[in-house]
Image 1: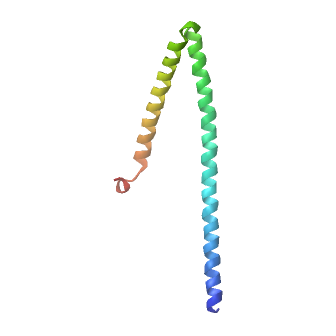
Image 2 (image 1 turned 60 degrees about the vertical axis):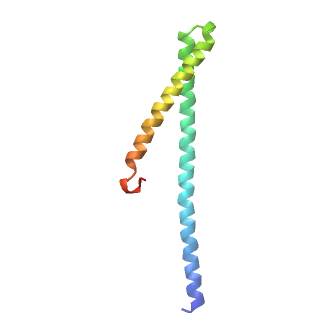
Amino acid sequence: MNEEEAIKQIKERKAIQILKETHQETKKTMLTLMMSAFSLVAALAWNDAIQTFFNTYFPKNSGLIGKFLYAILITFIVVVVSLQTKKLLDSDVPQDSQQ
C-alpha cells in the first residue's frame, strides 16, 4: 500500500466516524424534540384542568382574583418542579466535574 492509499483510507475512516457521530446527535435531538412536544401536550392538558377547576369553584364575577390565584398556583408548581429537577440533575453529576 502506498502513501496515497493510506491517506485515502484514513480520510474515509474519519468521514465514516463523522457520519456515525452525526447520526447519534440527530437521534438525540429528535428524541429531545419529541419529549418536548409530549411535555407541551401534557402541560396544556393540566392548564385546561386547572382552569376548569378555578372556573368551577370561583364565581365568574371574581375573574381577576381567580386569574391571580391561578397564576400564583402555577408559579408555585413551576418553582417546586424546577427545584426538584435541579436537585435531581445535580445528584447525577460526578463530584469531580462540579466547580
